[in-house]
Image (cartoon, rainbow, N blue to C red):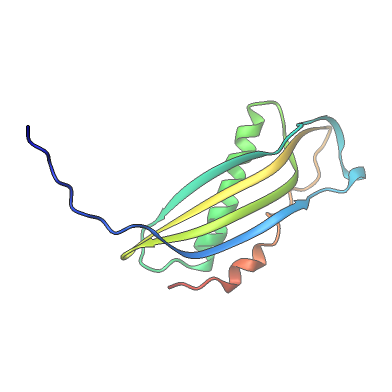
Length: 133
């Protein structure tokens, strides 16, 4: 029996981590709610960075895209807003490779009538401190 040996790859290291605790996104009087999910919903999204250095814009885009994906997922269940939102961003490196993982969470609900403007993800300013190492 022959075994193929794989080249030993170095493990992924955590290069940066930022997280935002749950934030209430709408005031009570802003929305006319008919359904509120009993628990939060969470999605984990992974993005491979093609260039050696990631920028703040790459990190911001990853969080925004993760949020959009979660909103699309809750839409399949007939829900259309996230009452609370939180996110956890981790940047991994493996040699010259980079990977961004975003875990986005929120309390989904269904709001009747016209929705107010969608707010950007909360506390995106914390990404300004991330290094492009």
